[in-house]
Image 1 (cartoon, rainbow, N blue to C red):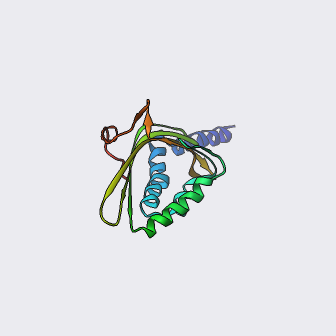
Image 2 (cartoon, one colour; image 1 turned 135 degrees about the vertical axis):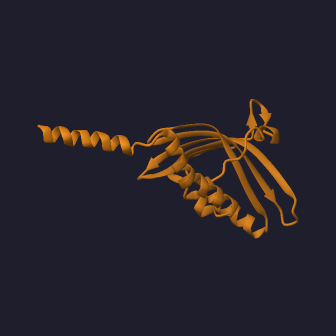
Image 3 (cartoon, helix red, strand yellow; image 1 turned 45 degrees about the horizontal axis):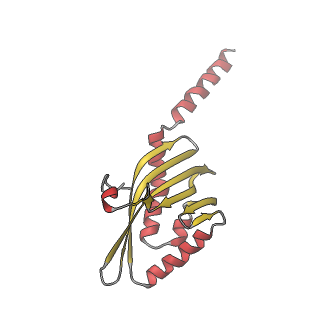
Length: 169
């Protein structure tokens, strides 16, 4: 009886020690997803970017809904073209809201993508994203990705993005 009680107590204490807080889980997501996402985007590595997504992913843009992963093929093509055009891509983003538990995270934020051509001319694009991540086989993966360049009927601008500093990984 005492032995089974001690065993049960040990299990409870071990599970409480191993449980991560939402902030700790978000730091894990930052290291294992967002850091790699940003690096892949900025190095025009479509395969590495696609690896941050789950196999079964819902991608939504103003152009429509993609449940077949067509955007992954488009990532490979567009980044290959980008590398061939001697252009540079910079991605900055910050989180407006993050809700995370042990298996799921819902993250909302704003992004700025800067395209710089071979002559040094820069073009900035701004938007808002809504991302769902799930822990799949022990790894965080993006399972839903929605973004837009419009908010409440108005285009998202540099002023909107400037409300917060970009996340650093």
